[in-house]
Image 1 (spheres, rainbow, N blue to C red):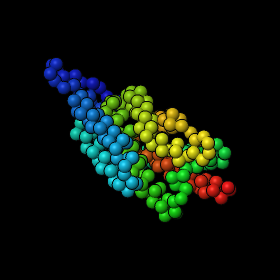
Image 2: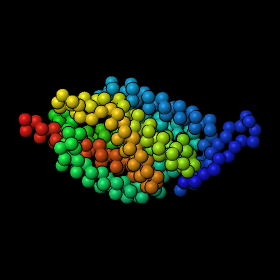
Image 3: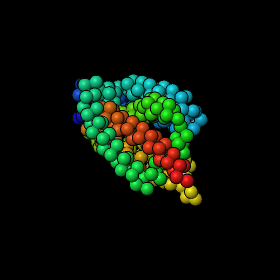
Image 4: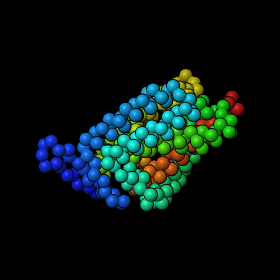
Length: 260
């Protein structure tokens, strides 16, 4: 996307950004961007620090779906169109193609990880090892896509980049900064991850490592969003990674128990 900045003729007028996308253009006021940005920050903080640690999986998924609606409403009220948010219907096909290619790469890398001792240690997850097949399918088919992927993609690859860079011309603002925020978002869940992967005297992984790896993942997903032009691209890759982590984590953990 390309765009231009249009400044008001007097000091009292609100500046606006004209964002051009495949579906046309949207005029986003600076005041609207600030309000939506503050609302997004508040929604992320409430979700990460209050809701996620206290709610079970069904309630957390419902919360995140509601939060997704709130984020989209705020972004649209700020003047962002569907193209700016990565939801242009005309870009779905390309997004799915890019996402499918990226998902194949993700699956290959995770399969290779499962074949190595170090990779198996990272995948081994006490949180899912006791899950039944039905519970695993529910987690992979409902909680991950609706409770995690939809919200995080709309927030971190949709609304946040669009608010930071409505014109879509800055890789730093549309990819790098959201990736850093995405990494920081995983500090809280990273602590739970480390606790669930401690099978000896020393834990496998660290919160710092998780933040670094999710920041790197955010860069890849942000790039997929730009190339694919739709949230379907990073969303499909995100879903593949989380679903495989759940399935492989369960199987690796069960094998560890059998081999004791």
